[in-house]
Length: 233
Image (cartoon, rainbow, N blue to C red):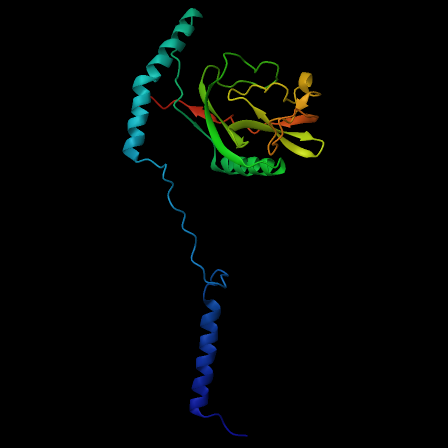
C-alpha cells in the first residue's frame, strides 16, 4: 500500500474544511427559479402627509364644533354638564381587515358575483343602550362611526348586498343605497315567499320569476374602536 503523499493530505483537508463550512452556512430560502420578490406599486389614491394634515384640520374647524355644540345642547337638556367627546377616527386591527376582505371575497364568489366597490359609510350610533329589535349593545351612543360594505354591479349600477341561501346555493340579495330592502327582493320574514329575480346578478330577464331564499349573512363591517384624540395631542 502506498503511503499518502503530502499533496493528497492537503487536498483531503481542504475538502473536509469546505464541507464543514458549507454545513454551517444559513440555508437560503427555497427559490428554484431565483425569482425577485414582487414589488407592489403605490396606489395612485395615496395622498401626501401635508394633505392629510390639512384635511384633518379642516374637519377640526368645520365639523367638530358643530357636532360639539349639538351634542352638548342635548346634554344640557338632560341636566348633564359633561362635555361630549367628538370621535375623530375609527380603527380595526390589521388582521381583522384582512379576514374581512377574505370573507367578503369568499361569500361573493359563492354567490357568483364579483365585488365592484367597497363603500365606507359615515354613520352615527343611536342614543340607545341596544339596537332596536336586537340584543346587540351600543357601546358608544351618539358617536360617529363608519360602516364598510361591498357592492356588486349588475351591468347598470352598483348594489349593496348581503348573501342568502337559495334553492341552488348562496345568492346575492341587493339593497338600496340606504340599506333598505328592494321591493319584492328580501329574505326578511314578511317577504321570504315573494322574492324576485328581476335584478338578480347575471339575470338578463325582465320577467319577475319567484324564487325562495332563506337566512341571511351580512357583509357590512362596523364594531371598530372609535377614539377622540387626547386634548393635548
